Structure formats: structure tokens, C-alpha cells
Length: 584
Ligand code: GLC
Ligand code: CA
Image (tube, rainbow, N blue to C red; front, side):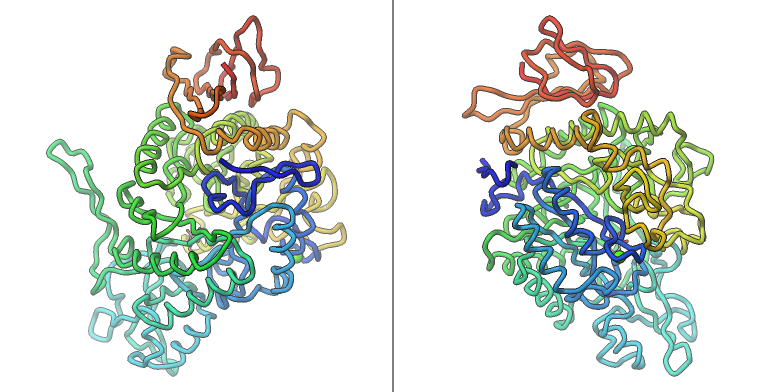
């Protein structure tokens, strides 16, 4: 159970608790898009420092920062040239140190991103390699392979980049093509590194220690399943193993993913983290195809947690969510890893839009018929956004009632929707650029935060500053932080109250969970109870996914995702797309 201390009238989780990460609510900041302090149109670390009180008020336990390291920003910072310094665009190392300290003073932990699958082409290792011919030791830090064809003029195999096109780029030496190609699972500006090389191992040992020594509480590991490639670079892709009825019984991942060798790396990293107090943690972006495979990363001597992408991709539908919750609990409980919940991040079409358009699944990378509501190009209309916001509120309350740790992506607490009408020339995502606009990509969930009702950039930057790096919709004036702080019924107020309740009722974080299907007879409703054996009270969360009101007998309503949901004659009536927390 977490201990709480009161600081300046606010309840804080105990920073020294070794288990803080088991039930932490973690707020993700995409640094380019949160707050611009110096008016160059790009968010920065001092912008974060100025607005830390906002996060303290909201009541989150930790911040996860997408990368703010030196790099050319070919992939929004996931292309790093120096892992141990801050890009001047974001500030200085001193700013980062001050930020870590100030956050800690407010009771907020800091998690930063580490990108170990690839460097930027601007990293000194790659610059050294590209300056030499194939066969030189500098190239051994990367994956350089002879191409097919007489002169090696064709890529070594059929591997495709996640961002479209071949996963290989031919190198030149002294102005001539060499017939040797380097591997990049992502953009050509992000060459994959060779984890068999001691310099790579050492580079990341140093990086972890550098930031742990500066007080960072943990790392989010980018593409955690990608670091080791299949020996000999065999062609081919993911394979599905079917039983005699044609049901998928197993998935053999693509040979550039999910190799067993990654586990040795994480055991090494865990040992480094274990040298530090208070507890330092790892959260993996683990893209393994089955929960059994994910579980391996969460063994006690590897990573602490991973993102629950099944919850993120679940449809707004009771069955879809129930299935994920069951699977998640079934596989986490035996291995002792906390469950995590997440619906939004910097790679995902915002849940408001997905839920409002009834997306069957999450599909940022698919290119489907552009007019379809499920297309990544589709612009949700006002009605769909309004429905999505309503569902976003219900989803937030449900997520914060589930056991374990949860993630909130910046702007989710405001109910922001995906922005689709970004002019082509402003778009920066390599997903868009490399697919020649076929796949719309992720810029639309990275649009800067609206802080104020008025002003050129709605308070994202100073009034006399440059235009934000991505255009912000004027309509966001109404959902700005300023507008929502004034409104007790806003999404922001809802989130803040839920986070406060979560802290006042520790069983919401660490307690157990059981379904309470007995409370409502409807397949479109998810009802579950949070309890712990030592306390008499429990909290019941009921989410109505259906299109009819449901009624539940209760003693009191702790919070509801819609205003005007209250108790009448011992019953609460829960309208469609609404979640409530109840005491029975
Ligand atoms: C991860 C990041 C994504 C990035 C990719 C390559 O999936 O979340 O933003 O493009 O890795 O680093
Ligand atoms: Ca700036």
C-alpha cells in the first residue's frame, strides 16, 4: 500500500516507496508539443519547468518524456546523435537537471526515453562508419550486408521498413556505390546498431548510468523487442501457425524482431538499475505478438513493466475491452508484474477520434479507402468528436479504476481529438513522407497543447513568438487548459478528481479486482469491483458501452464521467457511454 504525505495541501505518493511504479499514473510529454518558453514555435524543457505545477495539480505520479536528446529530428527525436546531451532546440543539460530536481520537489518522478535499436546517421559511430569502406571495423557497430545481384545493386533481402520502402540503404564510398547496404527497420536516418559489438553495449551502459546519476527514475525502452536480428538475415516475414481448424495458435515474428538475445541485454540493464536507490525502473515498448512472449521480458531480473498495447488497440466495445482485461490479468498476476493500461500515445490516432468513429482497431499504418471512417485520412465530424469525447471521459474513468499503473498522453486530459487537416508541407512524420502521403502518419496526435482560450498559439508559446511547429486548430480555444480549469464539469476536472480519489483510496491502485456481472444484466456493460482483503469497503466501476440506460443499486456515487448522474431512491441510472465509480 502506498503511503501519502501532504505537501502544500496536495496528496502525494511516497517518493521513497520502492514499489511506486506498480500503481503510478504516468503522464507522457512529447517535448516538442507541450510548452514553448522561448517563442521559437517548439516546446522545450523550460516550458515544462514553468508548467510543472499544472501536472502537480492534475495529480500524476510521474512524467515520461519522449526523446529530447541531440539529433536531427528525422523521426521526432527517435533518431539520436548524442544520448547524453539535450538538443539545443529543447534547452541544455542544466535545464534538464533543474527540471528533474523541480519535478522531484513536487513529488513527480521522471522517466525518459532510451532508443537502443538504432542511432541517428548523425551519431559519431555512424559518421565514423560512413567515412570508411565496407569491411572496416567502424562498420561492425551496424548491420552492413552485401547486396544481391552481380554488383550488390539489390537489397540483401526482402525486409521492408516500418516507414515504407526497403529496410536497407546502399552505402557510398568515395562517391561510388559499394554494393553493401545498412539495415534500418525505420527511416534511412535511423541505422540499426549491432548489439554483438562491445562498443554498443558500452554506449548504453554509459547512457543509463549518466541519467540515473542525474536522478532520472526510469527509462521507457523504444522498440524493446527489436535489438537483436535473426542470424544470417533470412528473408520472409511474420508467420502465423494455424491448427487444423484454421485458428491461429502461435505467431512466429518477423526475423528482425523478437530474438531471444534481447533478454541478455535487459538482464544486464536491470543489474545496473538495481545499483540505485530509490528504485529505478524500465518500461518496455514490447511489440511481441503473444502475451506469453511479452511475459518473458517481465521476468524479475528483466524489465519492470511494459505497455499494454492490447488495451490501446481495443475497440470501444464491452467484449473487446473485457477480453483484454481478462488476458492482461491472467498473464500478469502469475509473473508478479503489475498490469498497465494505456489508450493514447505519440504514435496513435487519439482515442477520442478512434472511439468517436467506432474504429474496429487501431490502424495508423494501414492505408484503407480514404473516405472510410476507418481510414487514417478521415476527418471526424463534430458529432463524431463529441461522441468520442464522451467516450474518452468514460474510458479515462474506467482506466483509472483498473488495477496497476496507467498512462495519460498529453492532451488526453483535455479530450483532444486527432487533427487531420494539417497541410502537407507542414507534416514532418517520416511515415507520411516515406509513404508519399499514402499513410497520414502521426503528426495529428502531436499537435501542440492549447493552454489558453485566446492568443496566437493558444498559450503554447509567448504572444510575440513564432508559429507553433504544427498548426493548432482555433476550435481548441474551447478545450484549452484555461477553459477547462474554470469548468467543474470539464474532462480536466474529471481527470483531476479521479486521480485525487485514486490517491485517497489506495485499493484503486494496489487492490484486487473481480467482475460484478451480477449487478447489471447486459452484455454491453462492464462492471468490476476493486477490493483488498484488509478493508471493509470496496469500489465498483461500471461502464455502459450500450445504447440504453442501465440502473444499478448503490449507496453512493463517487464520481461519474457525465454530470447529473446521481443517486435516486438507492439506484443510479447510468446513461450510454458513461462510467461511474460506486460504493455499493
Ligand atoms: C517507437 C516510437 C516511435 C518511433 C519508433 C522508431 O515505436 O514510439 O515514435 O518512430 O519507435 O524509433
Ligand atoms: Ca522553444
